[in-house]
Every structure is written in structure tokens, then in C-alpha cells.
Amino acid sequence: MRRRQWFFAVVIALSVFACSKAGVEMFAGFVQPVKFPEPVYHFNTNPVTQAGFELGKKLFYDTRLSRDNTVSCGFCHIQSAAFTHHGHNISHGIDDRLGKRNSQTLANLAWSNSFFWDGGVFDLDLQPIVPITNPVEMDESVSSVLEKIRQVPEYPSLFRNAFGSDEINTERMMKALSQFMVMLVSDHSKYDAVQSGEMTFAADEERGYALFQGNCAGCHKEPLFTDHSFRNNGIAIGANKDEGRYAVTLKEEDRYRFKVPSLRNLRYTAPYMHDGRFITLEGVLKHYTEGVQNTPNADPLLHRNGGSGIALTEAEQEDIIAFLGTLNDSTFVNDKRFAEQP
Amino acid sequence: MACLALIVAVSSCKKDNDDSQDKSPAPLSIEFDNIAGDQNLAMDGTTEYTNGSGEKFTVTDLRYFISNIRVTGTDGTEYTVPQDSSYFLIKENEEETHEAVVNVPQGDYNKISFVLGVDSLRSTMDISKRTGVLDPGGTMDESMYWGWNSGYIFFKLEGLSAAAPEDPGGEHKFRYHIGGFGGYSTPSINNIKTIELDLTPGGIVKVRKGRESNIHLMIDITKVFDGANSFKIADYPTVMFSDFSVTVANNLSGMFRHDHTEN
Image (cartoon, rainbow over all chains, first blue to last red; front, top):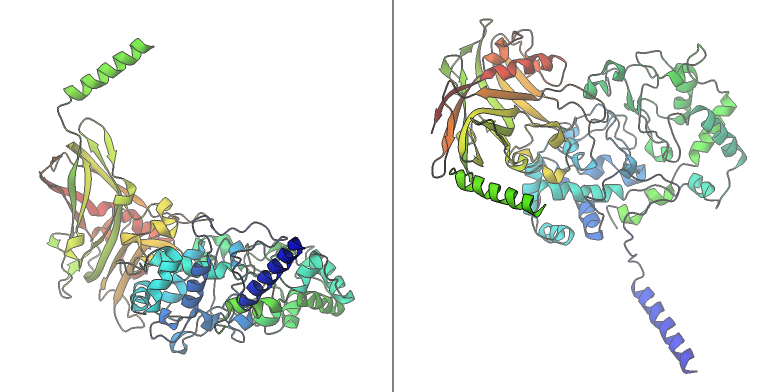
């Protein structure tokens, strides 16, 4: 009898504890999805903590990162658009100045070994310097951003919680931003549920998956749907003559090559390609079937058997698009942990 | 075995006693005195200089990284300054940056070498190792860092010249931003230059406690145009991250010469 009373007391205590925690989920840190490979981000020099993540999120949504305090990271990387600038072929930044490329998703950056369409940055910690200093994005200097945020009363204590002292410097600001960004893991699509046996594909999705594996997976490697390489996928040279990775390596074989993007969350991230030239997936599929150009360094996977492009019937294209639909992750784009407004 | 150890111990003691010279560290300063041909360099907006192609120009900005300083003693021993204390950004418009002060063991040295630029190892290090002049958000103020292609600009020279075509801003400006540490995952251009100077003709340096020996170098910026690969401002008014930057970088070593030593 006594033992039983104890049991109830514990149960009640636990449920009260759980109630008091309701709405405040425990911070789990970076969680490695079972089906994903090992991340490449250097967690050993920058482990994710709740305080670091929260500071990074505040910085991510802080317009002080731009010259006139109008543009935050979240301005061109909107959560509902899977952290892209939905609807903009090329992004506009400060003073409505236009960039030359389509803003990329921030999903699954922990697995990325280079950043931007040309891979010019090799460490996520060095990535934010680019938009901050780019005249068409935030047009600011890192030192000036640091000076501004040092004047904001709540920041010193946030830095103290995250890094042990009030000091606000480049390293801490960048590492906090990285902690927020590597947490942006998208692994709750229907595809993921099928892989773990919780769901099954519809017939058209299943057919599309087989076609995808035979025709697309050579570059868009599962489960991240990119092999992180740089390729020329045969789109015509853009009006601005963007040479892609060539600018970074000065290697002839890199001219017109761009980073292979992930295919996750396409429903939220239109338009497509480095300059956002295709506004629909039908347009993208039409490019691969009919529009592949033989420009310098055109990828051999798209030029096989003496022909150009991928042979797919219209029905097959529809099936592939149905499969791509299973890569959308509504949990990710609605995840309150990442939201500007909680 | 014990016997041998004893001999070694004795001989090492003996050596210490014999070596009357105290090898503890003392300061050594290296002065970077920027000149243009026969003239001292002035960024006053009016003083004009002439390159080997006869083009007249003024200088509006000059800055460069010096790193990995090493000295060689008259007895042949080399001393490399610990890397963390061996990065300097020389800016023409900031007098206090013209001297790089390091600590080296007391002794006589007849050679000095250093890197013009930032070595590839440091160029790829964690952001926690990018402090001081290497901090992209610090005193360097980003002007010597390429964010879009992660890497430092090793050498920057800007100025005005009638020989340069009018740029979109309406100025006849030339801009040389030379960098490139060799690439991270894909090999690319490497414009890191190691400068080695023999101090014997201008005077060896005697580093001693209580005084600051000074190696006075002169850096002739006209050599940017007139080194092993002469070029004209008119032909190359802007050189940044490009294949031609290799040609410009090959001229840069020729800028440095040892003028004299103050002991």
C-alpha cells in the first residue's frame, strides 16, 4: 500500500513537471537524422548550445546587420520559403539593389562543405561576412555591426550566456550564427517517412522515384539530394554572363559550373536555378528533356549516347514531379524554433 | 649507460657555461619604409610618380600583409618567430603600422625572410585563429579580406592616373588587389611570396636586450609595374583575383630591399 502511494506521488509529480514545461520544449541541440550521413560542420570547435542557438537566431533576424538597419538575414532567407527569397529570381537587398543570383536555401547546411552557388566560401563561420559586406545585400562592415550590437542592452548578457563573457567579437558573432544555421535541419518530408517505413509512396510517386533514381540521382544524391559538386547542367549562359565557379578557381573546367542544389522543399523555393530563370518545376523538367545546351564544360551525364538531355515522356515528367512533391517538409517551414516571431 | 648520461649532462652544462651569450629574447623591429623610385612615398593627393612606361600616377592607398618572419644568425642558426606573433598589416596612411616588432633570441643575424601575404595554413584556419590584423571584423575593417572567395588580400595598391580609363565612378583610377593562397578544395592561383634579404651589405643586425635593433627596409612601389614582368596601367588598370594577378605578384618581391640597420 505504501509503495503504491509512492508510485502515485511520483506520477503526479512527473505530470505536474510536464505541465509546467508545456509550451517550452526541451532544447535537444543538433540531432543527427538516422538516415543522413555524418555532418561536415566542425561541431568540435563550435558545439551547439541553447544559448548559442538563441543568440544566433536573434542575430539572424536583426536588421542591424545592414548599413541602414533595414535588412536582416531573414529578409532574403524566409522560413516559409524554406529560407529562400521566394518569388524573386534574383534577390534584392538594401535600397532595393539587385544581386545577380537566386538566394539559396539554408536547410541542411551542416552537411555542406562549401557555400554559395560558386562555393567560394569553405567554412560556414565565414559565410555571413559575404552578405553583410556585399553592397547589393547589406552593404555594411562586420566591425560596424559589432559596434552597433555592443550598444544594444540585451546583447552582452546573451553573449555571456552563450560564450562565458560579455565580449562581443567576430568569432562569437559568426559562431552564434552558425549554431542557428546548422540547426536548420529538414528531414521530415514524406520521403523521409517512407524511408523509415512510416508511410508509403502513392503509385505516381513510386514511379517517379524510380525515374528519379535512374535519371537524376547522379547529381542529386539521396538523402540530401545533392552531391555538393559543381556542374554545368546545360542551361544557356545567363544574360549577365555569370561564369559560376570559374571566378573562384580560375580553372577553365569550372567555367559555367554551379553548385548542385538540393531538391528538398521545392514547393517553397521557386524560382529555380542560380539565377531563378525557371518559375515552375514543369519548366525545369522541360529544360532537362528539351533545352540542354552544349556550352563549355556541359556535364557528361546530360550528354550521353550522342544526344543532349534526358529522354522522358510527359507522363514520366509528371511522375517525377509527383515524387519531388514528397521532398517538401512542412514541419521544417513551420518549425517554431526557427521562427522570427515565436 | 649511466656513465654516458653523466657525460652528456656534464657536456651540456659545460656548453651553457661556455656560451657567455645570453640567448633570451629581445626586441627586433623591422621598418617598412614605402618609397616610389627616388622619392619618399606621399599619399597627399598631388605628388606624382612615374613608372617605367612613363605613366604618371598618384597613390591613394597602399597596404600589405607581412607574416612568418624568420632570421638567420651569423652562425647559421635559424629562428622563426612564433606564428601567432608574426602577422602584420602595413598601411601607408598609418605611421604606427610601419614597424613590425618581434622578439628573437639575442644574437647577430645576417639574413631575414618573411612572407608577403598570409600563408595558406592560416588562410584556412578556424575563425578563432583569425584575430588582430587577421580579424575580418577588426582593425583590418574587411578591406583586406575577400568574403566571397574566402581569403586575404595580400597586397593592395590604388591610385589615380591619366593613363587609366575613366571608371563608372568618373575617376581615372587603378586598383591592384593581389591575393590567392592556392585554393581550398580546388587548387588555384598562389600569390604568396617569400622575401629573403641578405643584411650583410647594409649591416647585420645585433639583437641585444635594452635596445631595439632596427632593420630598415625600403619598399619601392614603382617595381609593381617594372619588375620581371613590366606592364602598363593603361593595359591593366584593375587587377584583382585573375590570372594576370600572378604576373603582378611576381613583380612584388622586387619591391623590397634592405637599406640599413640601426643597432
